[in-house]
Length: 261
Length: 365
Image (cartoon, rainbow over all chains, first blue to last red):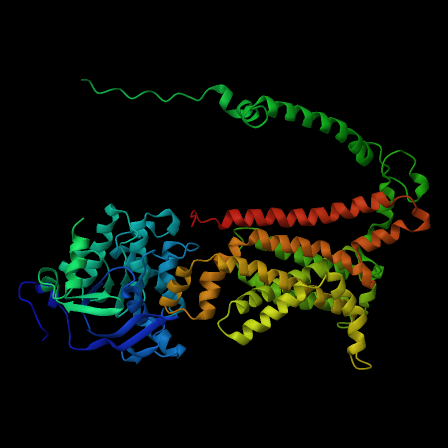
């Protein structure tokens, strides 16, 4: 069906031909500063894409444009058949289908873990409380912390909080998951528990866009790696090629910097 | 090498725990501290007995006229005789059961809300906010259900103080929240309106507001149109306090990290759900001290209505003290007024502390 690499079977798992995200010549400025320059990206359903690049390269901004946390000024972004414009209806429709996990978790500290997860199904999907809580428990079990359901986020470790954040997004049953440096704020011993959840999710065929510096994760999970620098997509390749034979000098430099310490 | 046996856990030294420990830590931790403690005890020794004697031991409690006040202490007879006036102002005596009913309902309602395990708090709250004011208004002013009309000019005393404070508090908070949200709005026109409103009301002294409402406003109204004086004062107080409240709430909104807005938006929550479910609960919790501060200030500021001729608790006390029959007992009157105000303000303050503790969710950002 799609371009496959026989050595890495998971890479092709569940990828269909259906295009789910399309960025066409997307440009964005912060004041005078040109953050995104002609970004073109097509994501098919079931793809796992890792975006990396030095800080300030626009990688976070790029994925934040996909659910309109950032507004793009020129070009087109089409998510799940809906184009993102100023129309609030369209934006809310897209956000219902796109889950997002943040670097700093951003759990709601005044609500329990269970309430954090059940909130959106109740208030956005309009499910009755019982049903929403059942869904929340299901996903909390999947991220392996059902026993923390009644605690408040402030009582959990960083790794647990990030897993709750993933569960919270999954409760909306999204078609796409965005990860914005999900492990950068975690202590080293907690990174693995979060990555394990993400790998599990990838195996199940979730479409994932992931900004991360976890190159091990990119190698095992991604079917495509994108390197951004200075607001542009410099290189796009499948992971093995990307890491072993980077095409551009900038990619090579970047990889040598992050892999050598 | 043998494994070391763990040391047994010993109780802490007697001098560090219990009352002795507390005394040592807090009162006698250093020579300077000890000296201050002793000085404070001496000052208390000087101050408390005379106060106690005046208020309780030497005070007069029985009787109906000033001739009954013969001792050196306070003449509480004065308060006793004038008590009904202090509570109800000139509200006609046979109709006072109406006032009592309204406040009894309020006390019952609030008690239901305060009792943790009470079911259907939402209903009680809705009743208090929506239906109760209507009942209260009709009972107070009469004119329906065969109740005789009581003009607002006859309302007075603590009853009037509580009405002004109650209306002020229950309108200032929601209005203040809306203004605070408006001031942070993306829409320039709404923002401009809110900023202008807040800055106007905050820049004017409350006395001026009250004066304008009672003296100037009638000049601008067409002939024959007449607002009730109390209503004008209520609107003035509510708008004035809502401007303060708006800034307190805005302080809370600004303390909420951007990530909370983003996480709520990313889940697909619209503006009002985001604010109502995620942002405001956290922001208001942060500014409970500020909100209660404003409430307390509002409660005490109600005494300013004296200048437009409304008789709140303080002005009834003031009037009674100038009564020729009771000349010379102003101190008792003001002490009584102060005690009543203090009781209400302290109550609010304690409740807010309790609320803060209850809303603590074991995190510190």
